[in-house]
Length: 414
View: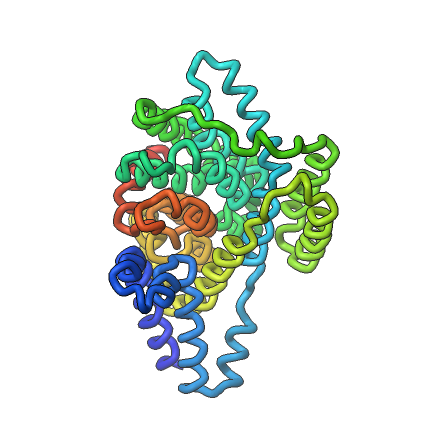
């Protein structure tokens, strides 16, 4: 068992290195066109953890036998990857986007600001905060699709795109903490520690809201002179009837309500696909490919992350509250923050202060890397085409997220 655990840690480390090297691998596709397909595949950030998870299962089969490898793979919980895939596809459907864009567009026109400026602020502030109601993956999907034509354009300076991406990832990570069911790292501990939505609003929510509003205002001001009006490419399509939009919103609401019951939300998803085919003239191509890639990434993270408990949990158990906050902040960058808080929920007799510090550090660091928070791969999949080489660099994201992360740290600690 020790050999398998060590093997899992090594492969997890290789997956992290692969994540940081993904943009460089993508660039190799242009230098070596003969093998461009392979380099494009290995350069997809969403493929990384799924690829190394497969390597892990094969290695476990060689070391301990096929039955033990299959047993381990089947012992993992894949509800989150399945839910993120489902909610991405439903939230990104044209009728849902039409409602959100129409609502926010109407609000933008009421403000004494340029419309595109107001829309960017809404996408960085209100939509991430709405993640506390519709869940963080749905908020990330809507925000990414809304901001893509405004901010993540070819003529926008690359450094500003990374700054905007960092703010978006951080704001979504902390914006879901106003309730007890929307942010994956909170969900992992809410039942065990008896945290309800009133508790979250009192101890986390108002702090997170202040940080989100501050981060959104600063990045919008920085982007202001580079923003320009965007013409809605959907304007020539058939208007979406109110009833069709209402049905799509109902599907989205039901998927969120049954987010912990894959049999139910996948059944709803099948009905949703049938409805989109029946009313195809009001649809646009569903983001099935992007959703599947994100699901594959998260499933790989579940498989690889399950082998890291033996070294992560002792670290979490041994630290004082303040040290635990900053350790969680750093560890979140290299492992999913939900996995980190789940390990904390297993600690017997953990103090209330340590509980707060663990979760606060985990959500504050949720924008530092693509793997830090479950919705991040969704945002990366939808926005990467706006970056050079259609790939998001890990270092660029880290640098872009440092300032908004520092704001979140201050909000949760002061």
